[in-house]
Image (cartoon, rainbow, N blue to C red; front, top):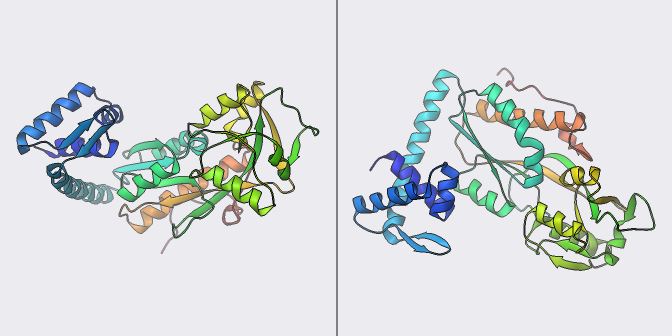
Length: 324
């Protein structure tokens, strides 16, 4: 048994299945399965309960996971210390985001972080908020870019920008006005929305209740944004999304948009830093790189229908820490 074996074991645990772990690690499923079997032989018992839905830990597996996490933390601490000594930045940087945010930021963030930290291992994770928050709490994700939920609770969100929400319709859908629609008219428009535990559904329900009407639901879809857009194209209903999520389809004539007014609604894109122990200066630099990147996207109008949060309105910030 070595640290690589334990890292692969932990990857299977976090992925919930051998096949998903193989994809994430860029390995053949048979290789991952064989190495797990060899590890089970070494420890003298089963580590996983296997089923058609994936794998779960046995009691022996739970015991081994404690050691795997301890060793992983020790190795990360050692690597951070060595990286700090050589001034090359963090050993790893795992960044998560919801789909539209990921589409708008990941490419530019890669180049920004690669320039500042050429030796850092960068990993991007796209997913739903609940999945990403779980990864942040587990220490698998170092920072998140998320739509701030309607009820943020005690989570320490750092607001970055505000993004308008639009009514998205099939191209042959017609309304009395050409480019906008009062928010209250959503009461008469059949909508395709996620189920109630998803952010944009909660936002829509809250806005409707605040203004004294109920939404007209055509169907619920908990799939990707791409799936929701396809259902709209197929004439199953309309939806509400940020403009950035549909701009290519609108330009191609596959979808139509109407600005929501009286009043408009928007979502706040925010930054959440994880539990990864970091030097204060390094944390400041990472935070400023993200702020600088977001500021450039908004100011150059590369992220449609957005405005910077008040804290960023002064423009791009330096990415080196101030003297102390």
